[in-house]
Image 1 (cartoon, rainbow, N blue to C red):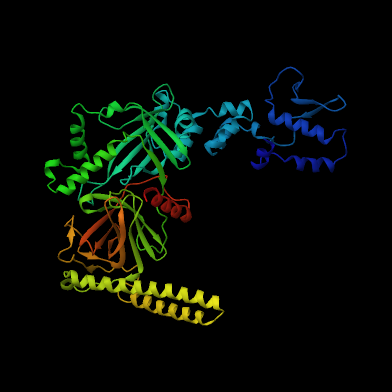
Image 2 (cartoon, rainbow, N blue to C red):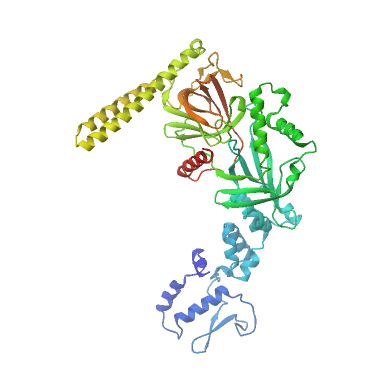
Amino acid sequence: MAVCARLCGVGQSRSCRRRQRSNQPDKGGSDSDMDEEEGEQIVGTRKSDAGGRRGGPGGVVATAGPGGDARGRDRTNTGSGPQHPECLVELPPELLVEIFSLLPGTVLPNVALVCRKFRQLLNTETIWRRRCTEEFGMNEDLRKMEAGGISSQDLYVKLLHPYRHILGLWQPDIGPYGGLLNVVVDGLFIIGWMYLPPHDPRVEDPMRRRPLFRIHLLDNKKATVECMYGHRGPHKGDIQTVKKDEFSTKCNQTDYHRMPGGRQEEFRTWLEEEWGRTLEDIFHEHMQELILMKFIYTSQYDNCLTYRRIYLPPAMPSDLLEPGLFKGTYGSHGLEIVMLSFHGTSVRATKLTGDPNVPAGQLTLDIDLNRPVVLPDLEQQRKIEELSQIIMRIHDEIQKEAEQQANGAFSTARCAAEGACGGASEAEAMEEDHGASSDSCQSGPSGSSHSSEALPFVLPLGVMARNEVYPRTCRKCFYGTGLIAGHGFTSPERTPGLFVLFDEDRFGFIWLELKSFSLYSRLTDHLEHAHAPSMERFEAMLRNMQSWTS
């Protein structure tokens, strides 16, 4: 506490008083006497008790020196101005409460160990009310909650602090399907919300949410975990923190998930919630198989899942648009959630939800910002052959440059082994050729990365779109590749296509080989505790996501 007193600027430090004493005539005391006196002032409570510590009306505190003589110090300070506190303990209680309420909640238990006075002051609800508000963003009227029998201190100590590590965004391990879980403080609860895309093909509708679990203090002032899966209300559940950035949920009463009509009723209810339609409304046989397969696969977990932490992508001022989460159309697989992030001159879209062909965690789109595409007039845009020629010309250039770089690297290595010096000039020549081709690709009206000029846009005839309502103007277009694969993620390959930026919240991608168009719309929900600590951590997370489902 002597350290605390010096840091807070209350009273003089021990070394300062020692220097003052050394400059004064010796009055029979020593540094050890002064240290003992200081220790008694910091830890003591200054009660007028037996032992002669407070003597007479003059208010003298007596301590025994080495020789047994009592030395007194007048604390009335007559004629010398107002007396200032010499340590934190002597501060008024209301000031101490204000100081403690500014400290992080994680250090308050250590403060309580200092002395009885601090421990008693830390029972003040004002301190914990402020911690709940500032650290966890609670906007509720905590005074009403306290009147109901739950203190802000209990809320912080027994609920918010123990489960703070599970707040934020998570991806469940549900095979190729993945998902998006957001764990938030909601009133007196911590709730895990599963985010579901809107019903296909309404990509611009808001996201849907379904509670999977909740934690509260309503019973016996002890944190209780409840499973919210199924249609029979909350029931007993459990949460286990497996390791850092990973936790698991378990339902202890899975019979609450069952419905009276058996699996058939469960499937019909799930289909209506998941797709917003009945099985009779889905005429495509392949789509029926995909839907039934997803129901069988996902329902077997019974909300006993493992979750891994994910972060929102960091934003840079030079980004073409703000990175974040988007929902997009994926043909018969319905709507899926992707994460758009920027990496130098490339834009990448990573799947958070997936399907049996391309699972969650995989890089669905990879856009090259060094390869802008200038669209022809509307009449030519309607011809798929015209668009294919433009994209394939860029694709062939990239393939040729990759071959030249590979040959150049091989030649340089061979020349280095032979001790020749011609390889360097050859590599430099190829770098110049690459730079020239890159410059030629950047020419045109889309070379400026922040141009907002609206350009006319129309899908080519023969390109299938799940959502026929799409923007008819765009800002920019770039060459990119999309990931396609067979069932079970077999024979994956990257196929060329066109990335179309419509506005800050929408973009599209034309899959040339599939003759299909995907429209993406931004997820606008406010997501707390989800920002990446650094770009390095975010990129490491992306690599881990791909390894989870590869």
